[in-house]
Image 1: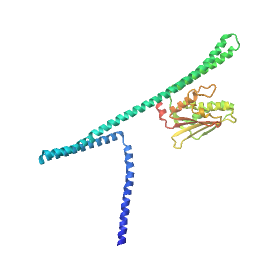
Image 2: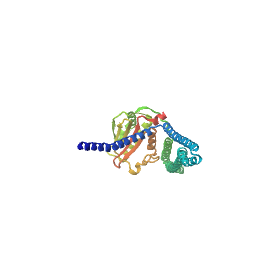
Image 3: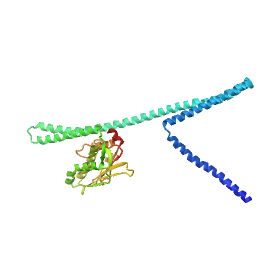
Image 4: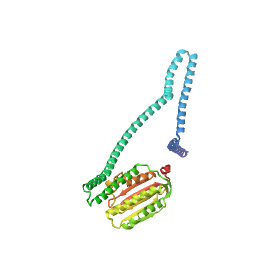
Length: 364
């Protein structure tokens, strides 16, 4: 019997010790569930719950006040005015505190929180506005300087050539001077045209397209040049790249990337020049991408973060707006354009587009 009693005690002790752990586990599971349920509530449901909570607080005060008044009246008739006054005074302090907690405190709390939030938001907005204005002013100054430099140099050169032509109208060199002056003015016109394209919000004509068709159309533009320069194009188009977008705008983007690769290969005199064009999808099937990669000299690390800036160019006759316009077109399609490079390891440009393009559809 003693052994049985000890075993029973041990069982009771084990059971009693296990109960707190079980309650702790249940509480640990229930609390996150409650939080998840709260986070899933709509704004109307949260407002209703808050109003209901405040109504319950006010109703509890009303019941408290009714009990207080009833007791005071009862004591007034049973125990007299003196006893009723003492109870009413002592209990009245509790009534006042209850009224403050149930009615006044929630309003004050809401007013203080609203005032503090408004002050914090205004301060943050002011700080962000100042930072944004500073960045915009700096960008505008840099862009203005680039535009002035890009336009002033060709005009200065053309003016000098015209002046030389005016010094000797019978000179045989005037034909050459006139040709160079026209080339410089053409450069100015091209820069202004690209600048207007960059500044203007071009309309995106959205339709169903296959990214592979856009790639093939862009490569067909360079067929003669590829053959002349002996550049090999390696295609790896693992998907047709079905998506929504503007095929002509995207074709221009790819023409710019392939053209830049050809220029880099030609300028560096790369032996066995090669351009890889690869297309595919992500594992989720929600995005399509195309990569243009060459085996040229690559991009200097200091220049890599500037190549999408307007008027930044490493070409002697470049306008510096090709990649800026390309990035703007890709952004308008809800995609991204990234550049990667190692000196001597070629340049690698990756374009990614969502299959369901909400931004582009909004412009269709």
